[in-house]
Figure 1: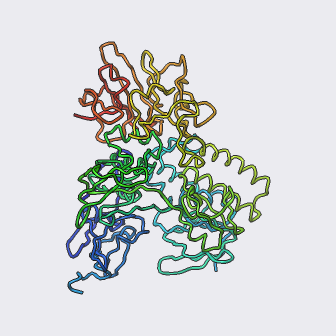
Figure 2 (figure 1 turned 135 degrees about the vertical axis):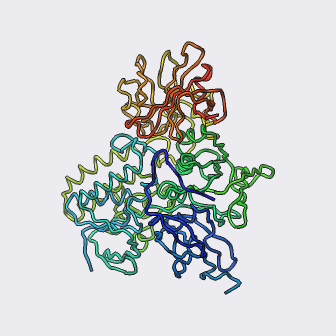
Figure 3 (figure 1 turned 45 degrees about the vertical axis):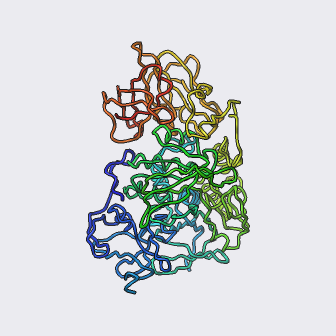
Length: 108
Length: 525
């Protein structure tokens, strides 16, 4: 679980884009335009981004700078999108990635 | 194929510095960076930097980042973002992925300033969501304003682990433990001390046994390790946490150099696979230079100097400046870099156990083992003196390259002298006017103003405070010792803020006078 920092002792108010709606597995979530998808998910307390192909193990944010690829998800139908460096836009469809699909394993 | 005099890969502190110097000398320069924003990791650094004035000491990292961007703008440096350099081929052909396109460029000279990547350690459960790199925590909290977690365990007591722990607390997370398999704290003692006095327990010679949780982290178990890093049975300790932060070192991202055919070496002192280069960044391939962490892990201040060196060397290599002019530039930069590479934490001292300071004073073992200086150790250091009236108490006990305190005091109360790594001393016969500039200007937050005896059985202590909410005058609470444990009752008598203090607030607390040399932090009751 996590949330947003309201006021930072050094940085003050952290500048954000316009508030926008997007969906996570079909459910509506709020975020700010231009922030990484992963930041919006984290702020909403959503930790699991995907399940690995072979062992079906959960993965989430790890490096947050686009190196490790742990945080990839299916975004607007495209799998393997690094959510930690992909800016959020209004109406984005973000889905949990199972292996390389947005379908849960039992449906694959 | 588009040609540039100089192509710089990486728009972090070293890459930008290199580009600025080269552009100033007349080179046509482009900088490619894979990120959405320039500045590398500087914009995640919210603490005041160490060093001296020439190293921009006491300026916060993100402010230095902005200064660097402004300077690059002024010099006419072109920075191309979202541009991943995927290849460096013969004759300095640079291949860049720009969006969906792959574009080829040619540089007459190339400077690789790709920086470093975080190291990882594995343990059962390490792949669970909630186990993150310390860099990820910084990115989340300092760039995006999102809390990395609520209850965090930090693994790693180097400067990154210490600094990030403090930053986590600043944004409202609880750091439940700071853990390191090494027997001694790896980073600056002043960074450790400022974390320890807020109440974070240090577990040296401990490491993670297991991260617990099914879908994400719900807890963690650590245990003590022996001298061969094997777990000692029966020493397990459990913490309920939602986040485990890993700060276990950095490795140079030197792949492009290897690809270009530069001679490489495995050098643990430099952090891993690095190109063999001279002290100004020339690799084994003429015209390919390196600067910053990619050529050996240090920190941002030295990376900026290395960048400036490489930029100048590239300018001379292409004939834009004469050898004499280069020598003059390098002499100045050499001196600046030497200054930063002195002291106990100098690259040449890596891995060594240093038992005495340059002054011959025994180093605090408690600081290395527990993160704080023990009460019985503190008075052997030259910055800690007892006097009548308000006076600075400087708890800076290791030889580190940093000296803003001596410039901060306009009354000449504090002296470090010529050698930037000397321990600060309180000058005999000097008169403190309680202005607080030393407290606010100390990047290590190691200076306190103490009035040991107010005449009514109480003492007043002014301490640096960078947390919210700011306690108001009259707030009652507790004085915490250097170890973060409650030592006495305390009441806030003053809270000073000023532009000159740069967001370090000065909290004055009143405590029973016997705690004048013991209480070092304030907690609201």
